[in-house]
Image (cartoon, rainbow, N blue to C red):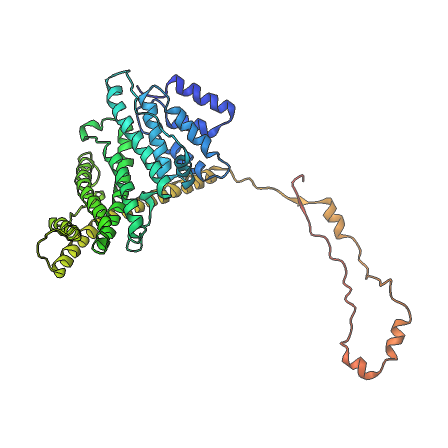
Length: 418
C-alpha cells in the first residue's frame, strides 16, 4: 500500500471545509502510506502546541480519533505523532495527556487485513502501553524523566531518601513498559515501526540516565538508611541490575539496525561485591550473623560502584549532548536554506524604477512670496517703555533680535502621475 488513500484525501478535504488546520495536519501525518509521519507535518503540530490560541484537547482528540481506525498504519502513525509531541512539543501537551483518566485503549487491537497487519498489531499494543505509562509517570511526579535536569545537582541526585524510594519505582515501571516493546532487528522492516523505534531509543537513553542517577543517590544514602528503607533500597538495586541487562540487549538491537556506534552509550556495571556488601549491611540491621567487614572495605566497594555508575552516566550524557548538537546544526542548516531561497526569490523580482516629475503644486509653492511675521499683540508704547528701564537691568538682559525668517519654499514632491 503506497501513497495517500482515497479515504485520506476525503478526510483531509472535510477538515479543509470546516477550517480546522490542526485536524487536517493530523490526518496528513497519519495517512495510509507505509512510512513514518512527514517532518513538515510533525513540525507544524509542534508549533501548534506552542501557540496559546490552539486548543490542546482538540489536538489530542484528533489523534485519539485516528487510533480508532482499522488500519495498523494509521493507528501506528497516530501513536508515533503523539509520542513525538510528548517529546518535542510544549509541555502543556503532555500535561493534558497526564490529566486524562484514559489514553489509548488498544490492548485488543488487531488488524486482520494481512500478515503484516497481524505482526504490527503486536507492536502497536506494546507501544500504546508505553505511551500510557509515560503519561502516568508524569501525573505521579509532575515532570518528564527524559527531560529532567541531570548531574551532581540534578533532580534525582539531590532527592531526599523518602522521595527517592517512591520515585525510582515509577522510573522502573516506565522503563519496563519501554523495554517490553521487545523488537528484534529483523522485525524492523518498514518506515513506520522504524520511526517508533527511534523515538523509543532516544527515550531509553534519557530515561536510563535518570534511573542511573537515582541509583547513585540511593547507594550514597544506603548505609545511613533505616532497616525498612534498606530493605526497599536493596530490592530497587536488584531490579536495577536486571534492567541494566535488558537495556544492554535493547542497545544491541539499535546497533544492529545501523544506529551510529557513537550514539550508543557504554554501560559500566557496578562490581558484584557491592550487592554482597548491601545484603550484609541489611542482615546486620536485622540482627543476623554476617561476615566480618571493615568500614574501610565497605567504603571502597561503594566508591568503586558509584564510580562505575557515574561513568555510565557520563557516557549517556555525551550521547544526549551529541544528539542536541546534531539537532541544532540541522535547524541552522534549515534556516540557512530558507534564507538563501528568500534571497533568490528577491533577486528574480524586476527592479522597477519610478520616474518622478515636479508637481504643479510644488512648482507653484516655490513662487510664494514671504513676508515677515507681524506681532499682533504688541503695543506701540512697549518699545518706548523699555528705554526708561534702569541701565543696570538692561545690561543683564541679552540683546534681543527678532527671529523672523521667511517661510522656506516647499520641497518638490515627486509624482508618479507625471
